[in-house]
Length: 287
Image 1 (cartoon, rainbow, N blue to C red):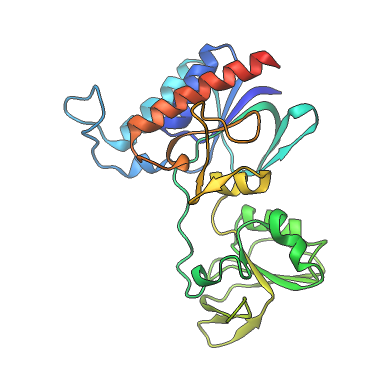
Image 2: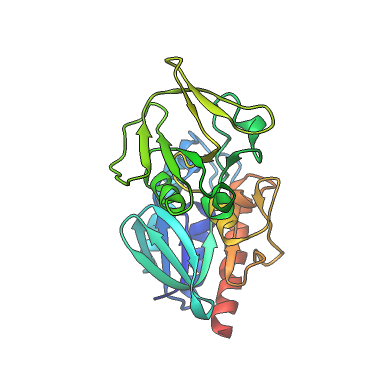
């Protein structure tokens, strides 16, 4: 069991970990993809680097700094965050399950809407981003899940005992290894999602179509907002809402960095990570 698990290894996540580790909390940092900072060729507006520094180098320095402090870092895709008994949380990854007292979400900016015609216009009218949240509305109906990775399979599993039939749409990607009596897989590239008042069907680029009552978006890996929605955490303008302590509306869960919106800069991420780390220390020591 951990005192705190931090999801994300960018400036916000590492900053939070530096504080929780020095606060004597048993800390685990989980990450899967490199942070967006690694895409920056040169950073010249961050304090202390008179000649600038590349994003990759700054990211690597942060990882090494955390390791030197004895923080446990694991490269595992986080698939779910669940509420356990006694105000604890379970983190389910592609490789293991972990129990923790507190969680810090530091996954960076949220993913953009899929660039498939019709998706944006039908959000909330048959297009959903949370199977646990909205699956209830599709009892006995036929639905689709867009995605091909572990996150898509997790969403499919959440729907198996609710929907009559589920079709995984990989949109041109390789079909995942998945078998269930009421699950089909279509790998054809998607052209458009069609519907007037609600989702009606999916058109493929080969001009074939699939009638469906609803679509669940689960492409790529889960981000901070995905976890927040499933836990009932308040989201505004697609950003996680936090107070000045970086605490969400759910006790023991904090968010920091780009996923909280505002100024998308390293300086803000580091500051919010520090605040989240200090808040987590206070919370864990009060339990």
